Amino acid sequence: MEKFEKVVIKSLTMDGCHEFLFNLFHILSLFQMKGLKKATQKRKTWKRWTDAEMDALKRAFILNISRGVYAQKADVLKAQHNFPILNGRPVAQITSQVNNLIRKGKKET
Image 1 (tube, rainbow, N blue to C red):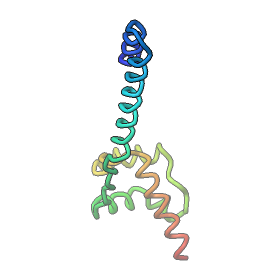
Image 2 (image 1 turned 30 degrees about the horizontal axis):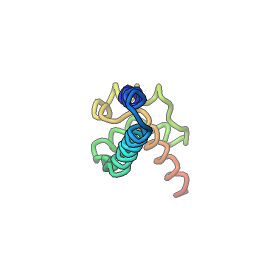
Image 3 (image 1 turned 180 degrees about the vertical axis):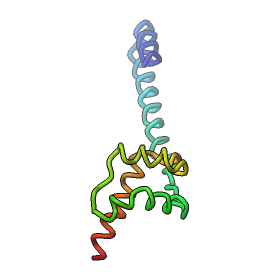
Image 4 (image 1 turned 135 degrees about the vertical axis):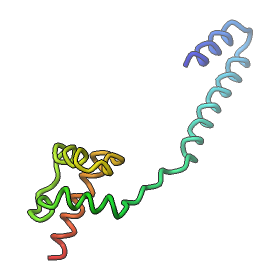
């Protein structure tokens, strides 16, 4: 924003409206280019759950899965403490995976 203010102040001190419009169009083109960079950024790839992670997940949440009770944040933190392999995953991902396992179990029965 500072660049914009400097260009506007500089162009207002110069003679003619032509300089001001030229600078304004230049600034607008910079904003458009910035938007294009965001659109072409590579999407994040998902990290697959390893067999060891899934085993730890099932062992930590066996009661939740068997009873059909969705995982809470406190449960996830306790599981991360007991199974250090789960520390590489955020709480939301672990919660979602456990909840998906519960839904999968309900669907099969």
